[in-house]
Length: 135
Image (tube, rainbow, N blue to C red; front, side, top):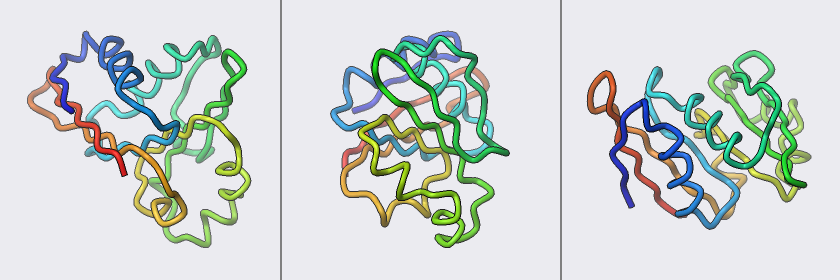
């Protein structure tokens, strides 16, 4: 399934994504600067997060709470190998029945069973194409 949207329609894209997903694990596959963090922030707001949402670039994982749901937002860009995943306690995070929103997900894929791959393609400076694949 695909959705073409403008940056100004990011909330619409987040709502569409949540309506068309049936897994709580979403892996965001997109180039740097494509709007992964912005989309994830909007998803968190749609799920009811009231706290300020920020990129977990340096913390690796940010946890949010909303409507009795835990939401984990990962930025694995700086993780170099699977040993580092275990060092941050990835097993403990994944054992939670929570939303897992993962940027730069390549190293985590072998430890997951069901998830969506969310591909964001840059059409131009203001337009993106969102594509959902279920694995």
